[in-house]
Length: 165
Image: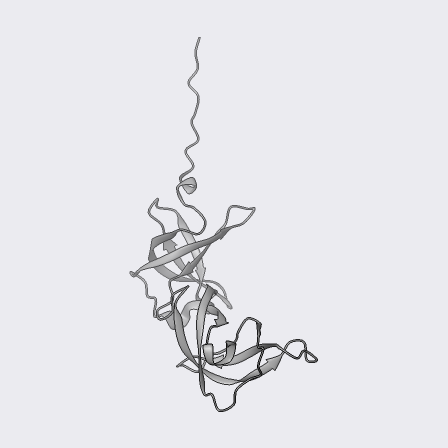
């Protein structure tokens, strides 16, 4: 006698880490006083929580369809999505306001990071870079490549030839 085997059909296997997906924002929900989330639904009908505190300036509203990168899946099977930034794209180069340079470590002669801000005034520190001929003066803005966007924060690499020559 043959018995019918139940087949486990896990729809989460259709989503891959690092890929982009359209998520429908169903609503904004409050779990606790300081825990507010976007409740988002993927193409499989599965729901995911995206914390509002990181993306409140993105202009996301209930009913919107938002392009999100599946950033990671943790050991408990929870999905972490990064909504597409409304202005910046990973791999692209943008001009940032320069506020100064910091030696890394302080006794270093040629390794620095730059303190920069975007057009909205949000401050960032670039990844470390090496300068062979010293830092030029009177520069008010620099070119930086967006290496990564995580929790709406930009990871920037200085690519300005005036400094890296």
